[in-house]
Amino acid sequence: MTVMNLVEPATVHGGVRADVFDEPARWRAAVAAAVGLSGLELCQALCAGPAFPSALTTALHAIPTRVDGLIIDVGAGTGATAEHVRQVTGARLVTVEPSPGAVDACHRLFPEVSAVLGRADALPIAPGVADAVLLNGVTSLIAELAPVLAEARRVLVPGGVLAITDLVLDVGDVLIAGPNVFRSITRLTRELVAAGFEPIEIGLGSTDPRLDWASPREALDALVAEAFGDDDAYAAFRIDQAHLAGLMRRGMLLGGCIAARSSHRSPR
Image: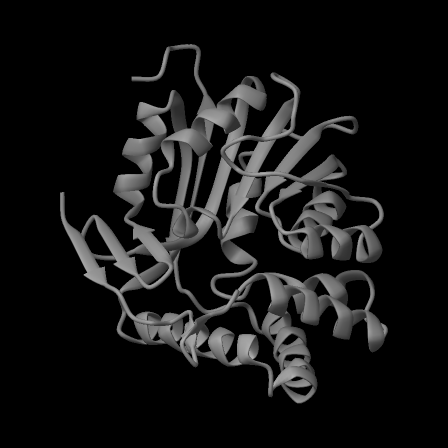
């Protein structure tokens, strides 16, 4: 196993560790609401950037959908991706997110999505109820995936699908970089198999977002910078984003997705 470590103080500003996810997410939601974004444009402005929506679209091909189907979006932030998936699939969407601010934003912005507070390794969801579980941009923020994959398997119906979309490592096995743990698609596959899943679809591609999705996001970013650019948390957020962009410029990361079906065999 190859493990690379590029630890940089990406989340430290002025000697204080700032939350580079929660505060910026709340700012973006507040600004999007203030300027009256709605519908697809609201989803585009708030959804994750790299490899979006291409990786998600590929993963969704493997997700079984029905009118009364249930998809759980874990680590969903403000719920923009969940709302997009709801519109595309027609399924019911429940988001599980550890940040109270993001959960509140989802309630306000996307009332058709049910947002609940919870952790990826302790989902507040009954066993065997979900047709699919989505981890969008989540695996690269988790050091130990086994508990998260076990929880996903627990809440899925027999044969349900786990869809992972994230930045993945191009060369090597694991890269620890600041707050991120980037895995190769091969490593993700091994961890899924060990957790009792059978991979059914894998995709790799550019980290560039599609232009029609990138433009609304960039416009919102400019408004957020104007409103919150003097905040310490914003400075930490920008450092973290620059760190991530540097890894992508160096060709170390790809946009990746993997969909896997919950198998009947026991995890290893």
